[in-house]
Image (tube, rainbow over all chains, first blue to last red; front, side, top):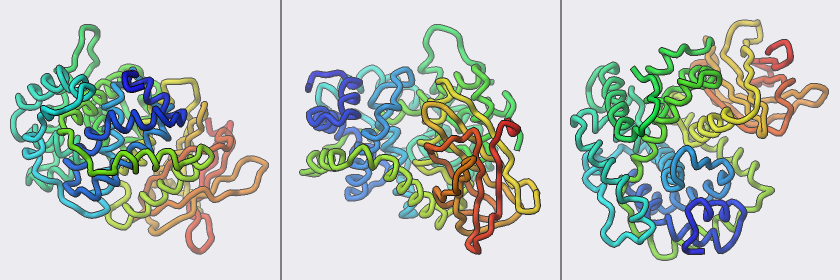
Length: 189
Length: 226
């Protein structure tokens, strides 16, 4: 069970298999809790968010589509959405986006599964992010991690709405380029 | 509310992928990408990139007992309660957010989950239709989108000249009694609401009933509406 693929564990989670549930939680709990902490900055809130994320994963396991990304990214997207809601309900302000990025280094004591998730993807992602101009990087992090809309970024960064949208768009285009694989490219102008 | 164009969707694609596009814009774009493979592919690619960013967050050891509590939380749920719990959570989130911000400009996790699952469902077999939402005197007040497939969805976007406060969302299936399925908060005539439903959405009346018991807005999904 502990050596099962992420997809197999998720299937087991969705089916309510007790062993799979425990293995799934154990495999991803550090990542899920880590992201919840990074967004909320509050251990109690992060704990509740992380637990709910696993419950949501169980409820929506059948909706997971491997073509749309790895299980870890799917689960973390659920976690982020819940953490953003928790932040909004508490009217909490996001922490400094630069601080979050500075933390973005996989822990050296990460387990083998986490290293497998991290590895190449993390390195490529970090390069792509760090190559962005600072203003674009901040806009991207505020949007991707904290769910800030272009309007909210415009307000917090004290720039016109059009500028905020341009920063988000430019950053996303560059990020996607880092993910590009050989083949036909979609038409983003 | 008209369907977005390819140019509009491409412009909005990064915000769609990040889940930060406003409700009406998102709804218009989703209708477009339901029938536009290029735009759908673009949004999917950007979404994958956006979600992968989350891998950058540093892992952190949770408090002692977390694993046991998380497992209990999952195992404590029963399949038969899934929909009820999901609807309750949706209502809670929408009510809570409505109290702190303009609903139209908020994107809750439920909202994003809906959009995500909506996108997934659109890739499968099913049918997407929409009908105009109208005020009691027939004026335009937004749009109701329904998707009929393996799971049926209803997504309501209110964009009226006026109207505030909580409204009951009432479904009236053809040949059956009306049923209240949720609540929507309107702020200055705006609000969004969405849910799965076991009802036949191909022939469905939708009403938003204000506190005085009167249908303030209504839409009719029928063969003619398609």
